[in-house]
Amino acid sequence: MIILLVIPLIGTETDLTVGYSRAFGPVTAGVGYIYYALAALQSGGRDLPDSQEVYASLGLNTLLSPTLTVYKEISHYHQWYFLLGASHAFTLSEKVGPELAASASYLKSEDATDYPESAQIFNQPAINTTTFTMAR
Image 1: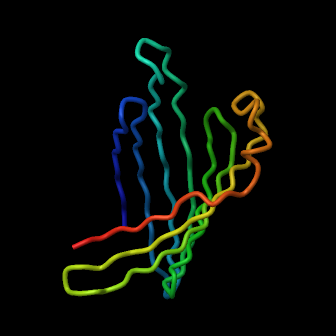
Image 2: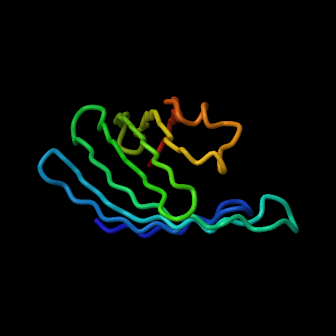
């Protein structure tokens, strides 16, 4: 599967993602590239340097669908980002199927310029998202 996403976020960032994934039996592997076009945080301010990442992911097509994705920033910020996720979809009816998902992340950055006051916080694991979605 080839993925191309362009996601304009509210005023400060537009993400361009190109990725490829393929299933090998119960394992799905993927690779991709993300370009982050970053704008100024405040009107009239200087734009932030754009960012680029490459990533690789491995997932199991089994209960809870565990997935590990590793991102490497390759332009300015020189960091690694690890994301471990799990999700499970339930079928309640033909039209309703909620999905529960959770993830934990770890950011590894040794660049004190980008994270001067928060270096200790960012280099620790954290629970980052829990989502509940309903789809038809």
